[in-house]
Image (cartoon, rainbow, N blue to C red; front, side, top):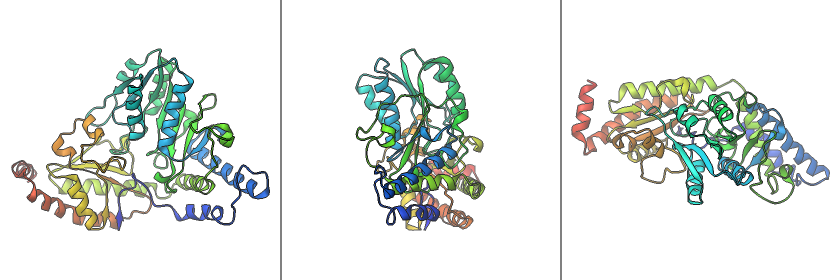
Amino acid sequence: MIYLDNNATTRVAPEVVAAMEPYLNEFYGNPSSAHALGRQMKSGVERARKQVTELLGAADPSEIVFTSCGSESDNWAIRGVLEQNPEKKHIVTTLVEHEAVRNLCARLELQGYEVTWLEVNGKGELDLESLRAALRPDTALVSVMLANNETGVLFPIGEIGRIVRSNSKALFHVDGVQAVGKIPIDLSQLEVDLFALSGHKLHAPQGVGALYVRTGVELAPFIVGGSQESGRRGGTSAVPNIVALGAACELAGKPEGHELIRRLRDMLEDGILSQIANARLNGTPDRTKRLPNTSNISFEYVEGENILAHLNEAGISVSTGSACHSTTREASPTLRAMNVPYSAAQGSIRFSFGRYNTQGDVEQTLRLLPGIIEKLVKMSPYDKELRALYAARG
């Protein structure tokens, strides 16, 4: 099987499995217990906290709070800020956020909050002047992702943070789920108050995440219970998964493999765009402004679901967009916000690489994909439009 859907989830790294295995059988105490087994478990949690701190460039391990996933981290950041600032009823976010942010903000609108939805251009990029203009005295929070999960487009959170800090008293939350482990991040140099990540995007298991809470930021607990996580998140810690997240962060901090991922993505992207006439890139063509592992390509007048099914039959796993809305047949909200024509948006495929992909994966995909698209083109009711595209490409 060729797996090119690493933005949906990643294979758990063998090094990560090895790190967590003792905490599944040999060590089994409650980390809140005072006895030796409990202290061993607690030690594993605190070591993982330091490993996450180092990957993110946070100032202190106390700024890292473990959660169950990125969606919990995002929800906690947004709801926690609003609970701490009940007099402020304004939120600024973008139209292309992950569902964990976008759907929550839409729900908050129904509860009386005002949300300013920032638009993007055809390349998926933000207009920072529109952000500056949106800030108000009653703005509680600005929530902007670091990397778009569908297109890989990066937002300049350094500049965004400076704009937020200079023009308002709002807190700045970043959904960093797709970016962590793929590009360097140094939160100590950024005006970021809250930063969410998820383990299964960087070769840790599903079911563990973290929220960075900058020192000095007060955040109401999302899960009320015992004194775990310094009273910030109740519930017995999922120690094996937390240890796994720490190991995955340490692995991601090593340079090996990152350049290969970029090279494989570029090889596949160049091959598709040069070989298939009705292929078009979604997102900025400037690869320095996109995640190094992600390509979102539309095949005009062809259904993405049909492409996915044919690739799946050939043993190649891809996605038509975010895994969180891939079961619907609607055009992606991200591509709609970019004004990608419906004829192209419906044929979008996301190819996303991880540390276990090889050049052979790319070569096999480039051998099979043109034939699949050609077959689907012949079945398309838009044969006139497609003939014109192919004729123009010679």
